[in-house]
Length: 482
Ligand code: NAD
Image (tube, rainbow, N blue to C red; front, side):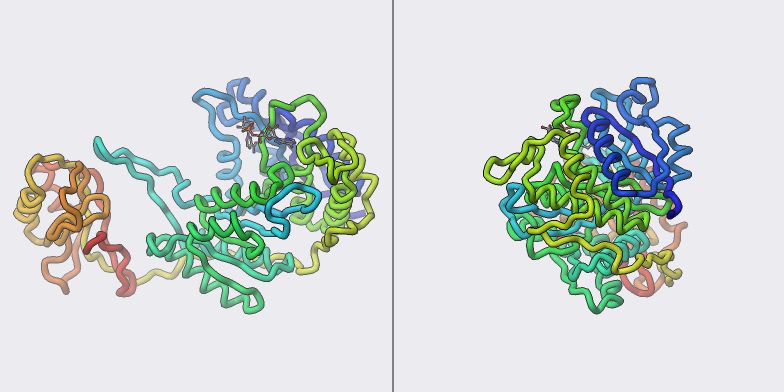
């Protein structure tokens, strides 16, 4: 008998315990080899005064098993609670969120009968790093951080997912027509990694048209890889369009573990009634079995589940008198799947897992050090003088003896030396200083000296950002209108 894979299981809140019981019964009946450790998370733990919703002893299990099958939890109302998902994601370094969105037409209502796509979302960086600051009375900022390593890791994951799951195409979604450096890096990394997969078709879409196409013509997609924020939005669009919010599972894959869950919440409105659909969690568990290399068990369960859906055994959320033959509760649905273990679907194509071999995910290294040259500095000022912007420019020119004031803009829109827009007002000004003599490198000392002069002059600098070139390529953008 195969060795049992250690798994940490949490039954969660609301419908969580009901659907988890149903799923564990199916896993057991199918012969999954799992050594289950049960932990408590969610409402009860929050109420004990643990702000993260998960106790230290549970972490000990998670760190050991590195595999987490999680039922939904209820997020308590009010302040002081941390998101359990964010805590788990950060602690296990879960960098990839993988969400298959499939329609099960004609058995589940959908406007998109032939949709079968997988969204691979970067899960650790982007605007979700949560680095935000209020800088002036008028302006707050959120930093968007995209790294070479983060981009390459998720893009390699998407290609390896496609290769090992027999998928034919990978689409990159970004907004690099506007964010040329951050999204540009993501897109360029995609193009570079794509060359290693000549048998996989690739394309790139800007996120606005990409999201529109996912809503209107999702059948043109196969695997989609994207950054954190875009992935968050498009994966909900895709699940909704597939008509399968209650059927979707997702996996979160990381460097120190993996977490598997349904995409829906704890559904307190139907908790305890025995009518919840366990399919989302079951599909997550099928992904977990693939991750644990128990592909044949995963295949057996998924094919039995497809057969159950085709046979019209449906829970209330997907019940449709035109195609449903039995309105099943959670337990009856699980029993119907168990009775079909070993059977193949007749209408849907049976799944075959594990034929593509194991994923090859090499360590992604930080790029080699480039020749980095300091070209200048952006100094952001909180200034709300009634005087025209020329007054500020003249004052700064007088202060900047060894650096040259080259431009001032307001939230990216050029206001000096030429104004891209008339009458731009506000209290947040980016003042760009570059070398007075184009060939001489700028030094930290010059910048410190300039900041001291600005401070002594009573001007409030709220942030500075050094301007660098890397191997001769400019590592910063210019203001709109420049
Ligand atoms: P929800 O997904 O729990 O419910 C939305 C609707 O879908 C409800 O009408 C519910 O009855 C129905 N539904 C959901 N899952 C179902 C299932 N398996 N079978 C049948 N019907 C199902 O979303 P919500 O009501 O916005 O959130 C409820 C709670 O869940 C909140 O506390 C929220 O914070 C939490 N939540 C947790 C997670 C998680 O743990 N990953 C995710 C989302 C929401």
